[in-house]
Image (cartoon, rainbow, N blue to C red; front, side):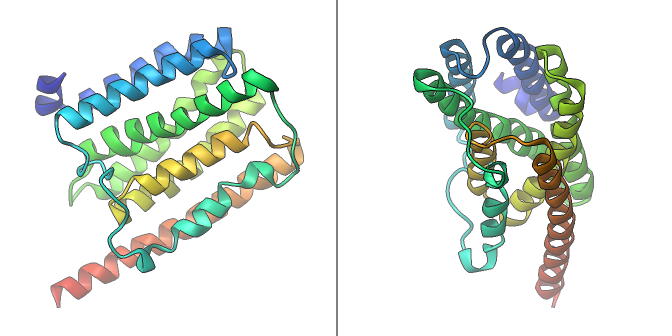
Length: 240
């Protein structure tokens, strides 16, 4: 694993993502997020990723060692976290009860961590360089969104999957730009986990869901432009 990472880091990231999709799709389709099986499989992925990062001292590279140094400059995380509550905007309705709800909640928390590490961690950092930043952001965001197409194979309806892909691409750009600009992955993990967990507690009304998707797309576009220009201004100041 270490040799592959050192020689072909992008392939290393892609193989992790493929493995995740290949394993999680049938598990989700057969057992669902509310099952202990799903929780254990996600815990295994999380443990494997964490072990690799710690053994190879890659915490700083992947933005896991702390928050952005100057938090006043990174207040843009607050609107992102507010947007992450969107699944609750149309009211509350529990998807599961009792132990099933506990398992599903824990699973969703792990999904937030695992998917951020795979996409904004492994893949994005593997592609990132000064002259390929735009490519790294774009590929990471779109790959993250299109990755949700595997939900079709888990039994999810086509319209719902299509909506989820649009939603995920918008969030993909937003979170990738946020980690690129701040250097910290922790706020993105929190936002991702909030989205997934709150999906279990929201009323899930179709009209409200499409409104949330539209708002997310608009906010993502605006914030990506803002963060891009903020980066350009900092670069100009450093040159002066």
